[in-house]
Image 1: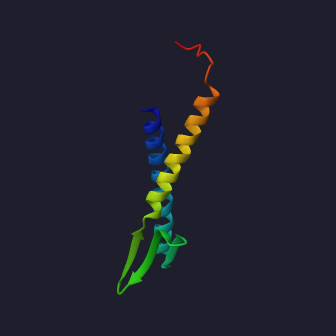
Image 2 (image 1 turned 180 degrees about the horizontal axis):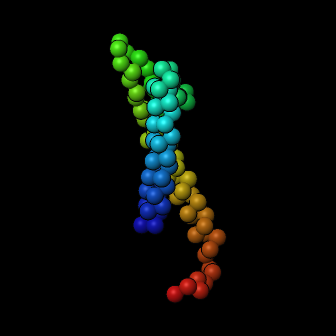
Image 3 (image 1 turned 180 degrees about the vertical axis):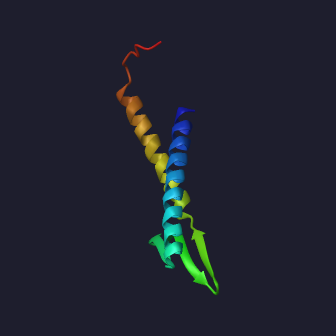
Length: 93
């Protein structure tokens, strides 16, 4: 249960932060009248483009992948901390 909690909290935190940063980037691009594509290889994070008379913003699956990576990193860090603290008596009761 601790592992699931560590994974979910890490994924939620990284996902929310990534979404906020990408939204800020997209809004800045829209305000400046620019198009932008933030990708890593075939993985799309955000894309701002023009279609006819409208500016279209698309969030790709990269945001979810980034959240999953953040969850895995938090899980690894939690396991490392738990492993290093093994055998120590917690003075707080």
